[in-house]
Length: 126
Image (cartoon, rainbow, N blue to C red):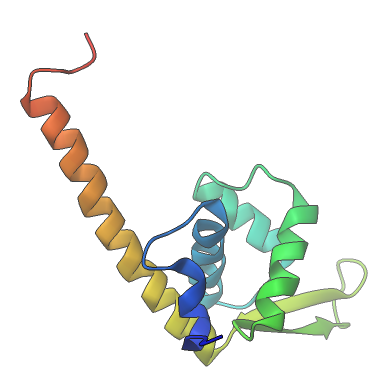
């Protein structure tokens, strides 16, 4: 099987669903600064996709780490409770984020065209 670099083959030129969108938001958040799972969950809420709970988020984070998009280490110096795993984006993660953002831009153009076409025909749902 011919695999593309940086997970490119996994999104097949368009975002296939909410997983890639969630990965985009996680990578964008980690591009700004490293963070732990709870911080990432809060940032996903700001994008409107964080209502899935922490369990699925940690599953996605583990899979992203296996793919080399992010890396993590334990922060045992936390004074606010138990040790926490801190995640950060990798070079491969940055490249994948760039790819995903390009695909999102293409998708946005398509969606805008559909909405504009609908509205220009006087068909506004009424």
